[in-house]
Image (cartoon, rainbow, N blue to C red; front, top):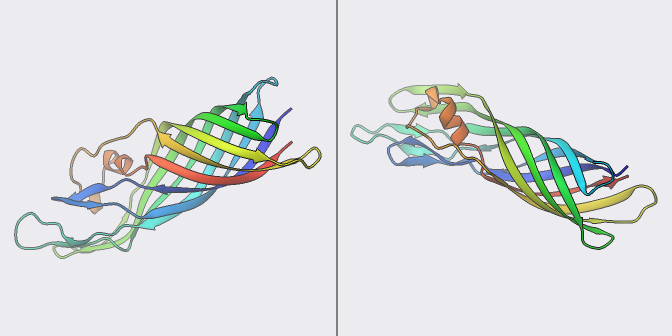
Length: 202
């Protein structure tokens, strides 16, 4: 049997959404840890994978007038954070490039949790608090490249990978932070990720 246990650190940026007329907010980059278990299928080059990325967060940046007409209505969302995590299930094909290097092609489904949470304020409405939540299940593709080192029956490995979402939801209407709908929350989901990882094969 050929199995792997991998720990990874993944960077994403959640997508921007409109919070007012012409006012788009996109939280900053965020990096979170994760774990992935990989198992070989019948001594072939095909593998199953299960994994998950633990929660990370990044702040929203809007602090400006969001009103299309006077009087001004300043939204300060800089104390609101977009929290993100997921679990995943999928398969992979690992192509050996020599005895120590593998090129991986991966297809997986991710159950992604998008959770804007924190305090915000508007000139018109005063101080508010948001804790919105949505789980978005969709397919992703990943491309990985790793190097294995000889160490008896356990082979340490390190690698890098890039991933892209195959489905993206678009925001259908401008929503206030106090009433974000499921469609707007899913529109916040990232469209790409990049990671480095380390683990062992046994």
